[in-house]
Length: 338
Image 1: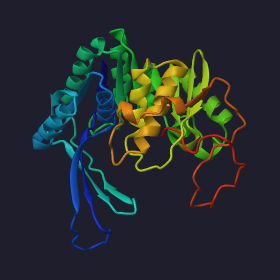
Image 2 (image 1 turned 45 degrees about the vertical axis):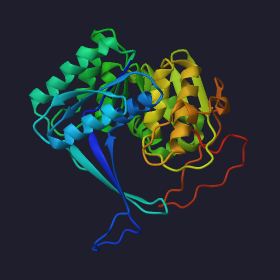
Image 3 (image 1 turned 180 degrees about the vertical axis):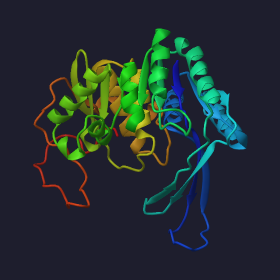
């Protein structure tokens, strides 16, 4: 069983509109509501693969009740920690050309008692899980070291924990020594005191990931966008890519990758291959849909334990500096798991 923790979950309402026009009355052609939050997405991906998963999350108001019902309908067991405030609702406006405009609410402020209740509840379920995945931003209320406290408590039960967050909460979590952290390239640069431009090659990413391991992470699963994913752990360095024909949506793709990684054991090249297959499948699905086994192409994934460290990364153009210099074409797939 995979246990997930989402401290700041949401209901994600998406309206399909012809075009975004400021100050106008817009009429939506489509309207859908999905459970949201990074940990929630990990549970959704695990459930889509037919495996058991439990999601611990603070819920409040009618919005929280709806989120719980939606998760149950998707095969996720929700464990509610009641809070006074209402669960946030995020709004997305989707245009036909793929442009997505998002308005993310701040969410409720958790009291010290509610923050502690969330920690206690996770501690009660973690010993039953193969992995606990703690994901997403912190709500208002808990201090930056909330994740670090959670990691320490879970380790006291003998359970394994993965953390996927950013900013001060990510840096603080390293002090608890999580078994796995999952930064993207920008988060990896920020956490190691670099700027994204400093991570211009696979070798530079390897060195930054090793710094995170020295700071407390057991293993680092780094998402590199079109350049696939890199896994740096005690037993070595592994890098892989997976082909993507058409990117339809990258919403939740990184969460699907983490679900695949943990579901495959959370260690070694086989787990990395599963992460790549799940991420590549997710970006080819609409909205925040999570891949099912039939969507995966594990045979198309390429993983090596000898990554070409001089390989330049294919970062998108920086608006401030213009397009990056062209690099020679390679036989590598066009896109890896996000």
